[in-house]
Image (cartoon, rainbow, N blue to C red; front, side, top):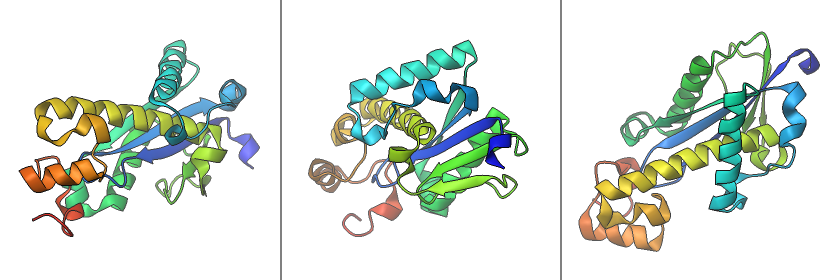
Length: 198
């Protein structure tokens, strides 16, 4: 059945666990005939920042050529605090699929971890550790990670006291120390801070 679907869609997210900043959802849409060109890609978290950027530049180049398309949707901390991280992920997936005009009838969707596409996409599969095992999910992982890291680096200029350019909002010892010293910023996830910061 899946062989009849010409278009393969990969979905992953970055930033599920940080104490600050958005959740980024990346989606890559690729005709099956181009899959071999991306067979070597692996999980973005295991790549260096420089190698992730190389793959991201390739994604942009191939989008310009018309080989593929991709989008990244960043869902902010206000929505995460109000609705929860799972809702934020679903929101990001829905936004990207709409912007990419993905057709349920022509597409097979592969998602990392516990992510799900809207129910109208009947041919979808969640793959545990998909970012390590499935190249198109790994591509989506790269897109999400690079866009989110870039956003956190830019936010570091607005909130220099937290060191976002270093830890990208994750709960490192440095980040926790800065939160305790300065209090939470407008981009911190208050629902993630309940255990140690008021």
